[in-house]
Image (cartoon, rainbow over all chains, first blue to last red; front, side, top):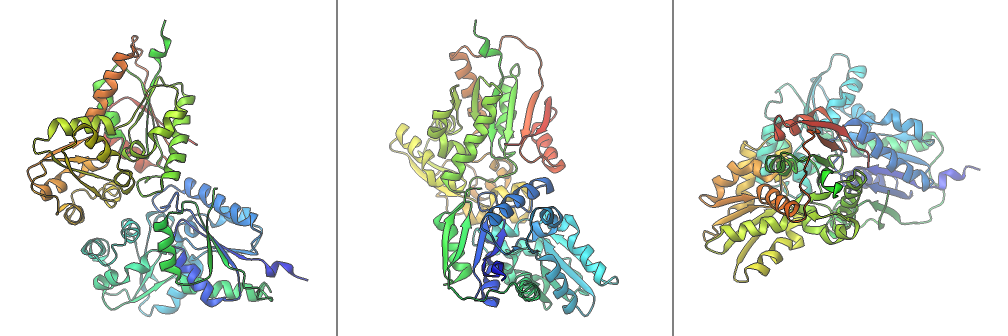
Length: 266
Length: 266
């Protein structure tokens, strides 16, 4: 009756960071097939203007729509923070971003009601996190900070270096002691958890991957879109630039999950 | 007789770094009109694969050809190192990159015949500098090093920070004492000259801007393409993403040079 439910779940990101979300999705929904596209030819998005981010995000969404996905997950904080309304006009299937699931996790975690949200310049400038948090918890105090060098540092594999620690200190040393929860509002940042913890000390560090995967599972259940047949179709990983280096990063993120890697022209 | 000579000179770059080359060109050839395009929507190029860099570079060249430029200057080291042969097939007007003029300057500068060339991963991996240097000075010893974090550090305006100094030490501390000439093989790197000098000490630091501008002037003379009329047409600056931040960076690079700023869709 509902053959849509046998279709794949589409996931997109500006690059490879969204693979942290895909990994949680595969763990949470092991029967589902996923089609992921990362725009590695044009990453990073977080330092670009909203107009450009919207244009690129629409191209990624159109790519996934051509694959007949049954729903679409925006695994990128920058796109989720800046483009959800534009994408909703384009995408006729259920569409989920990372902001709302993350915000619910932040609200459920904080006791002091003083929280920090860190992300790309575009995410922080959009005020998407700040508005969604305040709408749910008007008395909350939010410390929001853009950390533009964190993405290139993780892309260079320098997470455990003195450069990472010094950069974390540069961005985060003035987070107030009253803050009890730090949200990593960019899918790259979990790789920097050690360096971040050294600066912020003993606080809850949360990220978008697990709450987003949980929200996708809930939505599929509610809309009767969970797959019924288990065909073991391999997941498909598309990247707009696919070098050996990027493939290694993807394998490092995903472990031995069964995936086909392909280059996509969009 | 030769009305081509009254046309503008096309200059392109992956972003704003090439404005250091444009500035020297304006200084060296003040009567000429320049049309510059920087691919700020897709910068950086230096960490991408050759296939993607070639595709983007061809789009920029086609944009300038539609403007009827009389010659084309590739102001980007990464594109000059990886795409000159591909571009030569496409571009019917004289085409100049930054590598050969830079190599001639390096050869003219070194006494010890031990030199360092630093650049993006794509530039260093291409071996373009190494091959051109060895062809002209077979006994030369070349220390080549990719410095991928230098571009994001300058784009964040952190050139004078501890992060810049630590990163320079990370990349450059093992340059041998015998090296007497360090070539900054990326148009962003001149902004980091202070941090680089603190690590490499008392060596000649050279870059691509001035030798390239001089090579363009020589080529225009030789091919009778110098402008004869001085119409004071403003230079045109196109960027594929044009935010206030990018415009400020451009003004900072170029000073009060007479320029029209526009967004280009390519």
